[in-house]
Amino acid sequence: MIKKVAVGLALCSAASLAVAQDRRPENGPPINIAAAKKIAAGVLAECAKNSWNVAVAVVEPNGSLVYFERMENTQYASMDIAIGKARAAATYRRPTRVFMEVINKAPATATLPGVFASPGGVPIMADGRVIGAVGVSGVTGDQDEQCAKAGLGS
Image: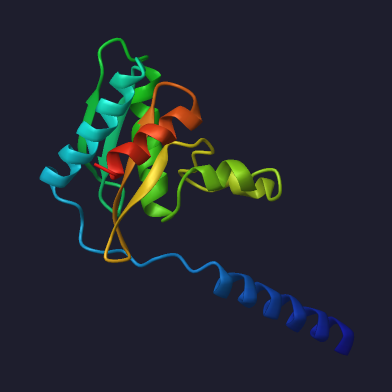
């Protein structure tokens, strides 16, 4: 019995340590429409420069859609995927690339609601807080993420 309690305490300690090391930033006030449009314009400029047709979504920290746009001839599936990537990045407060990288190590991650294990969803930060996220879909995950980051740099 004592051995089981000791093992249980060790597991709890390890879990607490893992949580302490995985601190994500706090949420801030939601992004406004003007800022969302500016980010989307930066995304679309980067994609147009590379002749990539994409959809771009910007959401608030709770995942509510603030702004959406798609380029001509973008595949229809990319509309929902861009919104999903943005929502995942905002609500989990981390880039969607993280899910792709961790899913093989912790397969249960794939069962979490709203997970998109593909790069292209990136949180939007202001003063160290998450104020929303941008999601891009239409090309490869790496290219989607390149455009999302370009939009954040604009």
